[in-house]
Amino acid sequence: MKRILTMMAACLAMAAGAAAQNPIFLNKAYNSDPQARVWTIDGKPVLFVYGSRDENPSYYCSGKYDVFSTEDMIHWKGGESFSSRDIPYNDEVLYAPDCIEKDGKYYLFYSQPGPNPEGTAVADSPYGPFKDGKPVEHANQIDPSVFIDDDGQAWMFWGQFSAKCAKLNPDMRSIDPSTIKDGIITEAEHHFHEGIQAFKHNGTYYLTFADISRRGMPTCIGYATSDCVTGPYKYRGVIIDNFGCDPAVWNNHGSVVCFKDQWYVFYHRSSWGSNTMRKSCVEPIEILPDGTIPEVEMTSTGAGMPLDPYLALGSDPVAGRACYLMGHVRIDSSNRLAEIRDNDSAAWRDFDFKEGPRKMIISVCPQAGGTIDVFSEYMYGGTVASFKIPEGDGKTFITLEAKVNGNLSGIKPIRMRFHGDDDKNLFTINSFRFE
Image (cartoon, rainbow, N blue to C red):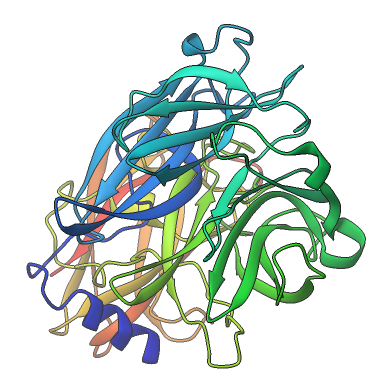
């Protein structure tokens, strides 16, 4: 309830019925590795998200970066900011970026496979286009993060398994190799895999990173703290875990930022039943007086208001906003729930049932057919509605209705459980709504 009140307070000045926010760019690029920055533009605070772009389920990233911005956490604009075409010495794909502003210039830090894996480009605008790509010598791994301390000294962090840091020179495009320090955080002590980010709050230095503490895969965003920029850092725990967003999810990467007095964690989720085709998401978080960050769960709403369960079918691709998928089911390229099999389930969090609905309407494309049981809690309890899905050709969508059982009101999650013949694709879900 506290989290819901925080979200509602943050959105109070926004228009009623504002769109939900996870994934943030649902119908735009597959923006992953989101690095959030806040700068003042024309006298207003603006939040920017820099990220890599997935274009193929067979490999991570692509040769393009995107940047998107918002003034209210609801409405976003932006697009391509940089391309490997602008790097004269390396045309490989671009891994996770960061960007920093100093003296009116914006410095994009990029990473790639191969020799000279880290580099910088520069622009006069936070949107780019960033040009003049040059390598950062002596930085020989991926995933750069840049941080400017209170004294004006800029630091660069990077690495896999063992994080490094060094002072940036005044040109903001090279490091002082004599200041390189390895082992700032490590896999053995801090569960560090890659994807580091540095920031400071109330005199404490924070590092966030892809964390392997659960299941041996970096599905978590973890964090560590120190009273010195170069450490030693103490591991503090997990901020968010994206396990359950897709049957093939393997990694996570994100950042923490404060925007208009609210802290947020940005992260990504996989789709298409692949390690990749990732989409950026966001959740409000708290930093407690003792400096700790309580773990939050994935939602369908992110920084927006709860989902509207009464939207007309097709006006919002609600199926693609599922925040937990268990089994074989995945979100496909059309933001539908696809390849559903027996005993799979999907969940959305949360809907605002201002008035108790009488019925539920669902758009499905039958294949082998089966049943859908709908619940209003994460744990299976009383069934809200049930659907019998006939066999079909796997091409034609049909609309079905079912009576809603009981008094469904207030802010609730929706969970579906699917049943049918083993090892057969049962149906595809396009959208649903309540009346």
